[in-house]
Every structure is written in C-alpha cells, then in structure tokens.
Image 1 (cartoon, rainbow, N blue to C red):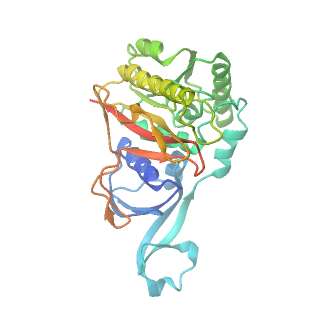
Image 2 (tube, one colour):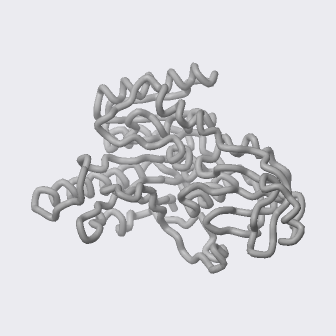
Length: 331
C-alpha cells in the first residue's frame, strides 16, 4: 500500500508527527519522497487512512497511489486523481481521506470555556503535540500548564487518560468544563483529572503513579506582546523569569518519566526590532533527559539529505513570540 500525505504549513513538523505516530503503533513503512508539500511512503501492511487522518493534526489529505505515471500520461488524467512527484512523474490514484476543518473549528469555538488573556494552543497543534509525545506503552498524557485543555482534549479523543494542572483556579474550572463537554459531544469516557496546582509540587505525587505517562505542554510564555520587544531592563527581567520557569518545569516534570518516555514542550523566543531573543532553556542539558530527533537524519527532503533536526518552529509570520517545539526523552 502506497500513500501520499499532503502536508500542512509546517512540513517538517507534519513529517515528524507521522514518524512518531507510526512508531508508536508499530506501523512499518519506507519513504519514497519527501518535500515541502508531500510525504510519500510505502507501507508494509495496509492501514485505514480514514482513521489515520482523524488522529493526525498536520496532514491535509491522504492520497492512495495506484500507480506511477509519466508526465505525458498525466495530461489525460483529471487533477483530483493525480499528485505531482517531480517534473516528469505523477502518482495516479485518489484522495481517500481529508482533514475535517469543521471539527477543528468546533473544538476551538464551541467548547464552553475560552480564556482570552493568554494564547490558546490551536487544535491542530494540540493534536500534533500529543502525537509527538506518545510511545508504544503510553497510557496517560499529562499537561502541567493545561490552560483551557486543548492538548488534553486531543489526548482524550485518542483514548488516553489525561491529567492537567494549572495555578489559576478559574482556568482549572474551565478546563474541567471543556473536558466534560468534549466527552459528551463525542460520546467518549471522560478519563480526566485536573488540579489546582503547580507543576513542581504535583510532580512529586505523580512519580508514584503506575501509569506510563507522556508529558506534552505549552508553559507560560510571558506577557502578551503587541510590538517587537525592546531590550530594556524591565523586559529582560520578564523574559528571564519565563526562562527560569521553563527550566524549573523541565527539571521537575522530568522526574515523573520512566525510561524512554517523552516530554514535548514549547520553548518561546522573542522578536525584537532587529533580532531574536532566545532563552537559556533552549540550549541547556537536563540530566537524564536528551533531545531526540524523530525524523531520520538521512531522510532526503527537497532532494537533499535533511541532517539533524532537534526542534520545530510554529508561529505566525508577524508574531512577536515564536513557539519552538522540543522533544525530550528519558534515558
């Protein structure tokens, strides 16, 4: 079985999500072509694309390949039945699964609680964050900065037990409402626990739990910036505090993890008028945690060997705060 995944706006992030999900489900495949638009693979065993598209956040469509045809033959084929592989080659087949945009909008707009002061993790990104974190034995997803519960919602929909914490009591109440809503709306069991707590203190309690936990989170990214950050004393202090919080969170939450379990975290950077301010957390080593590369370094991407990719940027073009996703694994 050969499939082509049509990728979203962050192609490498989408490919990393596919690799991580396939590995967690023991789905073996070989890569045929990878570029900014498509990820073309050959599977060793058939799968169900309509189920796969519901799990993935970074894939727009899945196209089943029946045969490879030449440029000349492709001229006689309608656009919806072909995908361009290179200048001279096309894949002939059909679209077998499409991303449900309305479902993403529903989870973002219709859930009962939305906290407007802080940025919300979009549903697509939340789904990707879950898929990057899961392993073969994962039973539970923990978000130590759960906010309105975007990541927990996507994990719950995949059948995982979810645990969330937040220091804001109103946000915790709202997150619980959202998880109840999604449970009722989608007809699934609400296996969730959400606490008023901070990540450091709860980590000590979770360490004693028997679940196989994966951690996926967007920590507090600092104040809402409306224009490029000025490098004054006040702003440097704000950013330094964000840095300390993230470093502390990584150290404390990592205690929960067993060997080979993952922590997926977004680390911010801040745009100034002329450059970017990066946090120390971005470059630090954390004891028995290591940054991992989900995508093989020898992958041919855009016709060149990709090399080592340890993080993925996710941000709007004019955004002041840039999200950078890192994947840590316990060893």
